Length: 105
Length: 229
Image (tube, rainbow over all chains, first blue to last red; front, side, top):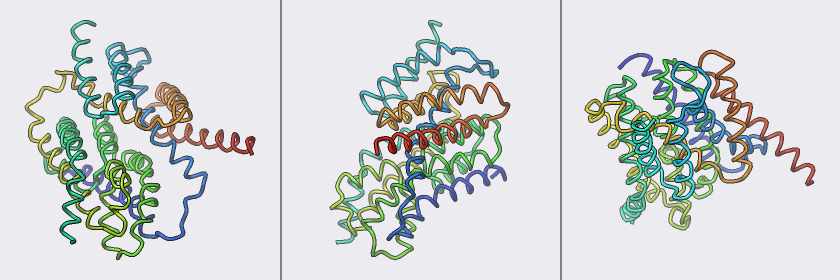
């Protein structure tokens, strides 16, 4: 195993384990401060959004601009995920649309 | 009785298995494209076992990033388990630490959702939760390893594969939108990320945008609540 990959995996494992483990281990009376709790509510949305937007609005070379094949695939996936709530269905639908658009655009 | 509990839990995991196997395969396929070997794929799915952050790590490895930003991003994205772990701890308050350790290590959004759908089944029945979580984890590892072996047979630019990760992230994003606040958070974080990516070199835009926008979200919410008093 490559040294860098090992570091990545072990590091990820540690930082993932601690938030899973500590509240259950410390149990009893520890309550999360309200501000942190509010922030935790938002962080997943914020991180995922910060990943998705640049995919739709930057090209491979890092220049800003609408990416039609990505954007027009993203919109139906967004609506489908919203209505149907299916992770796997959304991924398949997105891939099919993206593939189809490849022939048109 | 203990075995019955484990079996019950394993059965309850079935919908999770159906979800984890194919998503795990997608992970394995993409991880191979990013240069991980099947052993590393299995190792990551065994030790980390957190879907969104594993996909994210692959995306960041593809972008040539080093361990530190990857681990930091993983930390922030998985901090949400604090809430789930605190909630689930209410049902296991008389169990030894080694049991708690194993139970908590396998906590995921999906197993948490299933466990919470009927809390009478999990109350001080660690074996039920073991059954549920072990089965789910096994499905995730099997899917990943399967994908890792079949990955090289598939051409990465075909069949819409370049959109598999974006589609997954869009769907996970949609699942996180539970209120208008979350919707606006998505817009604000998205616009920030575009700005930071445009303004700064490297890949810090994800963390910068996420921390800044969620920090702003907390401040706005506190101000609003104060006014409503």
